[in-house]
Image (tube, one colour):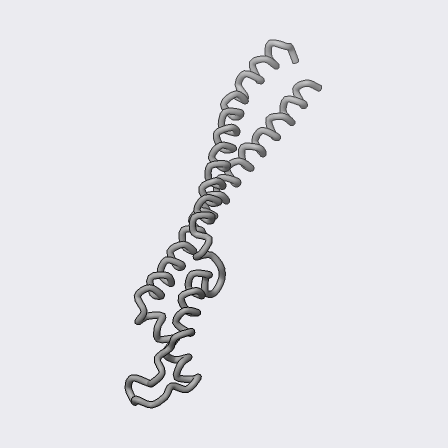
Length: 143
């Protein structure tokens, strides 16, 4: 094969645009990862499986000062009554209900950030694969 033909084939491969896409996807991945890390840092009190730190803190405050008597029957609360009362506070106590709602929202948004990071990784991996293919083609032309 003549050198002019090889040059035309190399020019038609458009590797410059592919390299530009590679840099773009690397930047997008970095931004997505930074956004995820920033979000996790800002909402660290609402992270975790089960009850988050903030919910546990509010529950601990409530558990430390339960009512002495059962409001409906007027008798002294048993441990089981206190557990039921504490469980009921998840919906009745505004601060606790708000913390639980915020925990759910944070979990949803973390999943959203993770999806964005995964998609950026996949786009980058795709460009790297195409670049590898083009490298193999160039090697083939060089031989």
